Image (tube, rainbow, N blue to C red; front, side, top):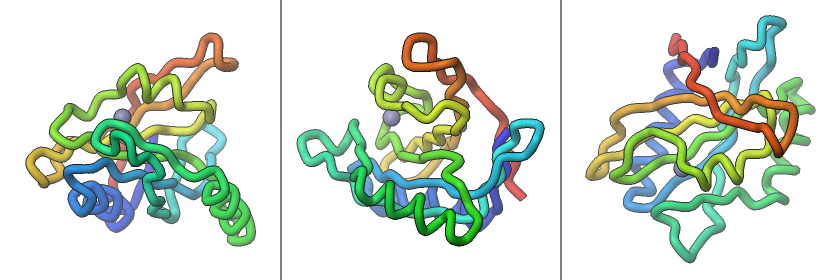
Length: 144
Ligand SMILES: [Zn+2]
């Protein structure tokens, strides 16, 4: 399960509206609870480094990711997930999303943005023991 505040939830959805018709992407920071629940305590917007097809691909600059991870740790936060938008496509992961997901135990949040308006937001947990058997599974999102 993913627990996220209404404020952070709105931030990631509005980010997708702002970058429409291109994808947005960003990082979710927070903590892992003992039962596996991820609690988001802050959200970081990232620039989309893909310029070839920004409407259906996203990529976070690795240097930006390292910086966010370091800054998060200084505040006692870990990277617990990632988010991006699907302009005019359903909030379901694609084979590319799975191929580019590498953080086992983290969540991948996808928001569908239809004609510029954020509609459905879904979260998927990346499970498995490694690259060979990793998969994305539906999880519930608790917005409080
Ligand atoms: Zn995607």
